Length: 320
Image (cartoon, rainbow, N blue to C red; front, top):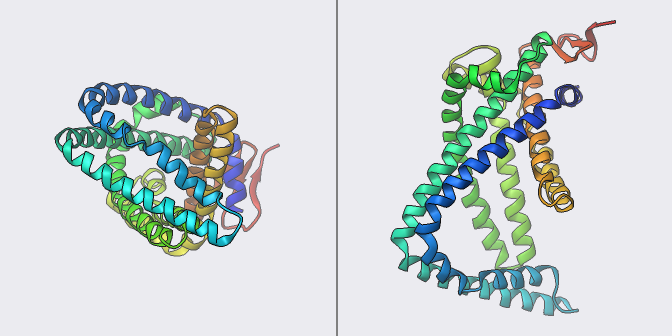
């Protein structure tokens, strides 16, 4: 029922998908221009030396060894081992080149970290706006403009985004370390399985993080709690809904990535933004429906139907 109602809300408020995409595209353009203006002069020498290593060629040969190779299993495994060693040697050379440009690289890293942090904060402020827009619809069948909502809630959304991004950064660092470590360990034995293990470990880690904090933003918006109070309410909800939300988010991330690759290839990359918008709005709708059920609050599934979570699988009201 929660999944079905989440899709129904997504369809009812599909215009929010386009508004989110537009907000993200504008931010990417602005932050991209700023980033290029800072990084281009700083890292030009380093990028020139790295280009001489022909990293693209080596990586292409490594990937070809995973999906191609000889006719026998021994031939494929031997080819994988050679290409894997070439990749390791390339990484060692890249380390030496990096050491020679360490000062410029640190400057570039600091600039990139600041830009990514600011973009992430802005992105989650947009997600906050999406969630608040869904709340207005679900609670009273009301509709607010994306821009006006963003401006009206800029103080609250900024505070929440700073806290949420801080936790996300720590989680991503941990998951990236674990997935890359497992990937390289298994890759020494079999390159293909190394990539598979790294990919699914990262996917599972992201799904776990999302499931653990699925109720944080809804509690902050719907129940008008402080950041700390909403975090406590979030963990109370997670203790009851974690298994269900984990499976849902694992599927959303997996399907989202596969769709992004497929649709992106067919639309020269623009389809990736469509998938990004749909998956994020659907995720927020799922969080909101889950939280409304957790709090036993009635909500609009669409403009004709109100759902009462205390009446299982029954509509509370049907408008004529």
